[in-house]
Image (cartoon, rainbow, N blue to C red):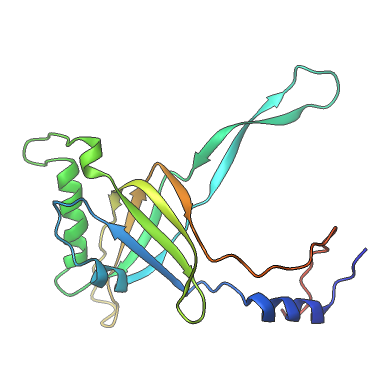
Length: 196
């Protein structure tokens, strides 16, 4: 069985580097009727969540012996959060307030058609040079939650953040650069040495 070594780990990291949490980019596409400076909005992005997905299962208990799980379907996260640093005029908040009001008219209490208010979002993992290494597209997105803003006199230097919770239907992977080819291994031993 292959033995773990710090040298092998270092060689692997040198070959393909590591993914860093602060190397990301996202593109939020608004419905065409909403005028937004998408580039400035992207620059104001502070943090986000790249969604996961889960295979739903059911228990096969119709056989003798131990039961086991069978795949039944696929589910995605209900919502993902994106946090923005706000401008002094709260224009970022206004963008999403407008989008929500496009979905649900607060004067007439009427709902717009689904296909007219949903859009999409791209999320990318960047390398240290800013090149896009991996990406996903969230399909049929819309801002489900515009978070409240808290005010206080206690901290003069606090900056307002705004978190938007996006609902979406599913995500698909964007074509990404292929990773470097490596020799196939029949077995891999995983571990984390002290100090790494």
